[in-house]
Each structure stands twice: as structure tokens, then as C-alpha cells.
Length: 385
Image (cartoon, rainbow, N blue to C red; front, side, top):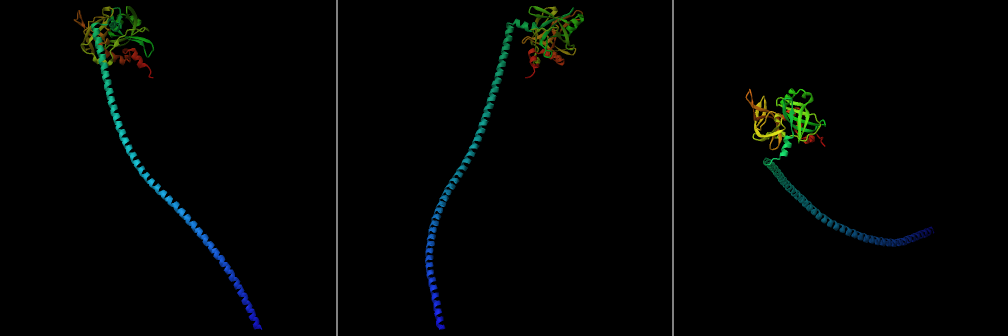
């Protein structure tokens, strides 16, 4: 019975086990179906994903291919542009070099042209100056010839007779020349100066004692009028027999001698026609005509010029003028005499102090400005602007 019970129990256990297994098998079969469905679903999803990935890859590949193609085009264009740029740069450099050469050629041509123009202008100016000089020389020559043919008497009188003054003493008579009558740049006063010979003033002071305080009597002619003015000797130089007088007058006298400029003294030569103007024997100023006879006549260490224009006592201190320009070139100083007991005057052998010696003397005394024209002296004294 126990055996039977055991067999029944065992059979029951087996049945239960089989049922359980059958139930588990059924569940496994159901799970297998779900697995199959899941596998199908997974496979479908994987297939869809694979298709999507394939499409995406295809799209990406297509896009990449387009990019590559675009890059290849751009690279090609860039390469072409780079080559073009290189050619352009080379062409630009060639153009720059050509421009530089062309500019240099132009500058050389301009410089040559300017040099030619400057040379032409200089030649033209030189020719113009020469022509002007020739014209002036011709005019001067024509004027000189015209004056020789038909002299301008009024002009001769204004330039040589009118500046001549007479110096008077008790027993002495002499001559002088007005060389300055204008405002003194230093003092601002009207001053008048007379150039004469020292021995004339010395003799007047010796025979007329009052002249030392009252001044030397000086007669000035203005047309038909005579003016007596006192003058004082302010400078003298015995060696060259020259003296400078200053009038005691604030009047401006109109007629002054034109003094030969320093730079033209060397042009004076023997044979040059001259006028000697003075007051011989106390006469009113008179001119005599002649020429320069010699430029070398040394006397007591001083050189004098000899003239052959007739002169006499009283001409001393008077002016010697170039006939052509009417410029003062000397101061008459001495006249030759012959014999001892009763000397004979040689009127055509007179000696004058050269204007060069006058310039040197007045320059040392810082008074050479009286030999220039008042206009030139005023311009030189004017302050620079």
C-alpha cells in the first residue's frame, strides 16, 4: 500500500512536473513568438535604419562630392587667378620700370630743354645788354657829336659854370667848386661844401685876418644874381694842395658839380678833351677848353695831371671837367712860370690835383660822401627795410 501510495505520489509529482513543463513549454512557445515578432520588428527597424543611414550616407557623399567639385573649381580658379595675379604683378613691374625710364628721359629732356632755354635767355639778355649798351654809347656819341656841332650852352653853364664860386681876400682871389648842398644824413641839417686848393685859403687867411673869425668870403652865382656867403675851412691837405670849405648857410644851392665816380678814374687818358673853369684875375667864372697833356707830373712827392687849357692867376681851386661828360676830374692847383726875376706865366701848362687823390684824402677823413650825389648818399644812409 505504501508502495502504491508512493507510486501514486510519484505519479502525481510527475504529472505536476509534466504540467508545469507543458505550461513552461507553452509559455516558451508564446515567448518564442514574441521573440520572433521582436526579431522581425528589430530586423525591420534595423532595415529601415540601414536604409535611412544609406540614404544619409548617400546624401552626405553627394554633398561631399559637390563640395569637392566646388573646391576643385575654386582651386582651379584660384590657381588661374594666382597665375593672372603673377602676370599682372609682372606687367605692373614692367610698366613701373618703363614709367621710371620714361620719366627719367622726360626729366633729362626737360633739363636739356631748360638748359637750352636758360642759355638762350642768357644769350638774349647778353645781346639785349650789348644792344642797350651800344644804343647808349651811340646816343652818347650822337649827343657828344651834337654838342660839338651845336653845343647846349645852357646845359654847359648849369653843369660847369654854375657850380663854380669865387673866393676873395684882401690881396688874394681864387676859385672853388660846389660839390654838396643837401641834408647831411648824420645831422639832418642842410649843409653845403666847396672843394678848392689849400694855398688859396691859406693866402686869404694870411692877408685877411678877419676871415679867420668871419669866414672866407665866397661868391656864388645863380643866374644873374650874386650871393656872398661866408665859409670855414674844415679840412685841408697840404701835400695835395686841397681844402674843403663849409658854407655858413642853411640854403640848398641848386647847381652842383658831378664828380667822376671812383671806378671810372682809370679811364681818364692823355688827349681827353677838358674844360678848366675858374675866376682868373677876379673875373666871373669863365671856361677855357683844352686837353689832358700828361698824367705823370711829380712835384714835392705828389703827382699832378697837366692840362693845356689856358689858365691864369685866380684859376687856382677851380674845377677841371671832362668835356664829354662834364664830370669833375680835378682841382686846378698850379701854373707853370718861366724865369726868376720877372717870371713869365705859361697859361697852357697848368697842373691839377687828380680826383683820385681827393677821394683818398676825404676817405681817410671819412668825408668822401660829399663827392657822391645827395640821392645816392641818402639811399645808402636809409635804414634797410
